Image (tube, rainbow, N blue to C red; front, side, top):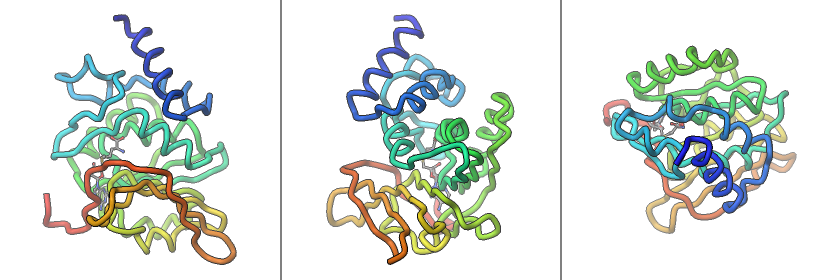
Length: 212
Ligand code: SAM
């Protein structure tokens, strides 16, 4: 199957899963996902599947990236914080949909590779750092949007504090009791309002610097 046919199949898959935003579909269609996947998995670059990226981490499936990006209700004036840079693919998608992306990754090895990809693609509106994303990025807060790409035990309180009034945070939550859920948290005048966007699976969000 040609690369174009694989991309068309992927876009149909995105639509089938409710990713109907034409701008998001166009970005996913155009962004070369093959740059973000290890060589051994190149033939799966346009499959709707999560792929290993080293450090026991994964690059999320395109439908997940599409659903989370759509839930963020982005536009070109918005500043986004992403927790969990991983391969850099989701940050690259976001960079085409908003004004600026700040992204944090706890594994330096992954971040160095992501940085090379951002440079190769000329994505000049992404700022990155190594660190514990559960602490957010106080110097750059507040953020109009926050996306967490690893499963938290609960909505991370520091990130909630760094959400601007009217802002949205999309975060997978797995408390180990119920099924893992994708939540959208909105900061309004009364405080935080949480919406359940359905089941989801993610690698865990890890705050402990000594854990691999
Ligand atoms: N967004 C990524 C991409 O497009 O490739 C995929 C993210 S992967 C599912 C989750 C990432 O979150 C991993 O790279 C992991 O190391 C990172 N992570 C987990 N806990 C973190 C923390 N406390 N701070 C920053 N990154 C964290």
